Length: 350
Image (cartoon, rainbow, N blue to C red; front, top):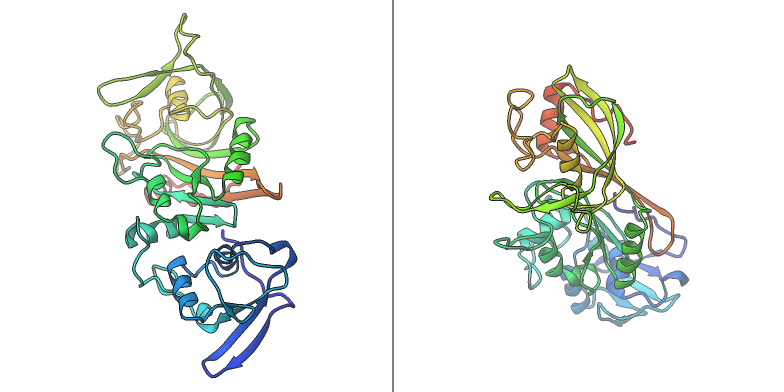
């Protein structure tokens, strides 16, 4: 859901021997913005490496002078933009995507991140994380989104992108990233004050009763042979217990075998949704840590975790206007929805 670029009255087209060249005027509220970030805002299909090539060859200029990607712009400055940036992008990449990838990240990883982008502006990036890709590194984890983004710092304006929250390796969907230090601090406070509205979709075994409810159960970490888990805190464990609250609602069901549920976590504990649904006797289908991968509710359902971060509504760290982003279901959940006769387009994400 990248912001569309619209032409303004300040733009004009100047014909040259090479074709059409646009001259765009920097708006007053864009003053002091870095050139690469301004370019990314107005031409999101152009990669950073390709912009560097355009700058080195003089095809992009500021006030008729050669410029650097990190130059700060003055209000009213005129930016020369060649016609090539408006050419349709090639399948599977951005304009100039055939060029060598930036140092620190492979072309494949760079393109993978580009495909994940649901929303982007100068301060915030929202990704649609795929199944099986870790968010951060850990023991034995070499490839993860945090590292991929770090290797693409120049693509996002020079600062190291910062994760605002985390989701499990096998959970899919919305992942929020801050592109500046200031945005990271403000978004972090928003999560801490629970002002971010998060909605997850899941398929669970059986049908919860009542069909709407609230789960309040403090959690403690418990290591095991198959990795870390969390469980309900026992009496006497209050000193290390983490308070956790989840609201759930059944959207649709298949007899009493399975239910499509909407989950809204109030808190953000590790494995919270997975553990809470297991505690009430309805583990998430495909969950290999909380008994969701045994006695599957129907044949031909993949034994992958059916938990998806569907929607995020959060105040923008700069403007305060709500960012409202929805992530489409991953392939394995779309297949299951079709198998069970669920229509993902029939219901609002509430």
